Image (cartoon, rainbow, N blue to C red; front, side, top):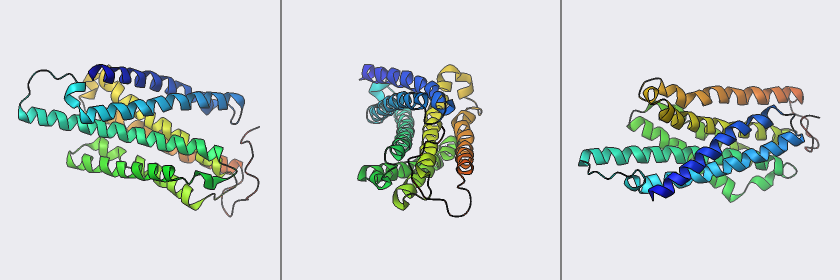
Length: 261
């Protein structure tokens, strides 16, 4: 079981590292162009591997923490309880990030794929996924309060923020001509927030163990969200101005418009 866990972990790290590099190609490339689309699909493929391996590893850690961590020496009852609790909190947080990434990515992809018929996005899977992410954020918040974890408390609103926005879009339907483009942008940036959060949190613990044991470690947990969430609002606002959809009732016309020429 430990070997399986390690193999999944290596796949997760490799795919995640590649995804976080690839993210910047469609982010910088002209929107709607060949480079943007091709690099974007490579990014989606890597993030899909990240999500699957994250869910698998979090499930293994939650169910079999002693086996996957190769704990051979006997532990006192108190030490065993603390270890299992810590590992299960870790597994819960990892699954939360994976679910958040999946919900955001799914929304970002299908907002474009269903731009001709936005109601096609409103499937039981999409609705259930976002409800689970919302509940996951509340669970992480409760864990943060119970175990006095500032990082868990700080990151717990991200899931409900993303899930609530997704559900609002799914249930209310389009509110502007370029609705699908705003949804695609904000959702794909949200996947990067989740990805960079996981990279900094778990990568810093391995690469900078002394920092991981200090108060500075909290910065690694919240930095991607502190940067990424304002970027979402600023980016959407930029394109709303570009498409003349700020203020008043937006023009509703053909949604089949390339954002950039």
